[in-house]
Image: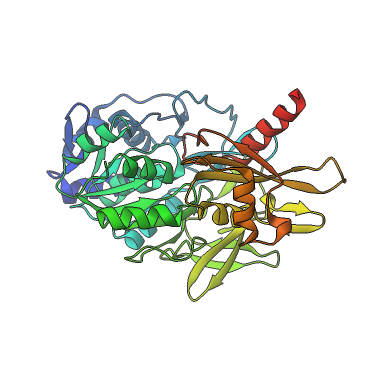
Length: 421
């Protein structure tokens, strides 16, 4: 089904530009991509593992589709998972990390991949005359769904950059007249501070982590470019999208539901997603929160006035003497401070009482600021019990290769530092 859809895209756009490698200047029309896939040798393996941000990734996916192989994209250096068998009917596997144990995969049918591509192109208004500029991981769900499937299943061209660094971005952006640029907040911040956001960006998308209001407003004020916040999950693809033309006024808003996606809130206050794009199952162990076209997230949300407002994650809630607080609420308050560049808040076990936690804040600043100064700042905005007790100042809060900040990783570092004392 996927390859048949690709052949129809080729028939309709054979001589149009499909793919460009900015570093080498190589270009392929849809017809040339098709010829490369038709003439390439196939593997005997049941699962194919494309890697990297390169044309070879695209070729590998196409050849796998032609041969009826299952595709499992991997980050550079990531080892394939030992899978002895696969769920029936699946054609695609996304890797994800479980909260306990080792990595697992999410299995998708062809229909589910095609539905997500349809929802994304229709909701975001992706256009063939605004090629996607690819700087994010093609292996991650975000990159695969915003770059690879729109190219192969909907005919949206892609220009691949060899690097996300500002100078590389500037060079890559000169190839097409107008571009769509999907990225993560850390990249948008770096490009903005370097004055490197290309002037020919017609659609700017941010996903993978919360988009700070101040940065969204700064980018708009300086460039006139609106950063569109995109909220999704590996298990179900796109969930919500901010399609407004001006910066948001509420950091918790992630926009309106994607086309063809139905959202509801369960009895625990968590979001439930229903659509044809919801994955088939976790593998090798099935889980009840992903079943029969429904994905039950751990995201606490409010659905109001047609919009989706994130209120934190049920698994991240901090227990402070029996009262629960979302770390995201504290982070939003901290980011309102003019000298706070980045922050991450989490709970750590208290030595004073069992089954309670203290609030820890990791802070990367723009200029000198003290813990006392930040504490006083928060006391004017939050109840005293929600103000962090421990403060950790760092030069940078490094995000992972998918643009996300890991609360679990920083909690581990904090615990190990305490053990060494």
